[in-house]
Image 1 (cartoon, rainbow, N blue to C red):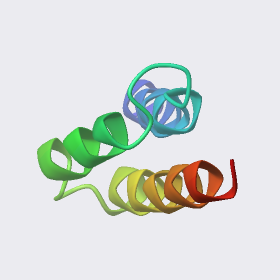
Image 2: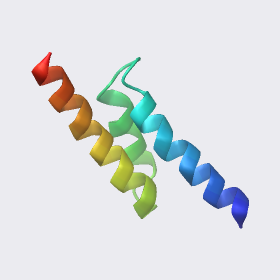
Image 3: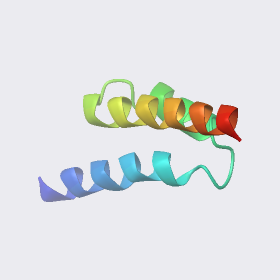
Image 4: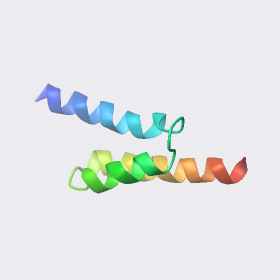
Amino acid sequence: MTKNINMEYVLASLTYISFIILPVLVPLIFAIIFRKNKFILFHSIQAMFIHIINIMLL
């Protein structure tokens, strides 16, 4: 049980760290692949919007 929870945390954090390489594409891919997992889906969509706003402000 804890392995799944830890894996969710790692995958959700990867969407935020992806601003280094392919900032909008990685969260979009995670949202498509893990659409049944609400935790990862929420964080991937949130990361995608954060990356879009960051790109618009730069």
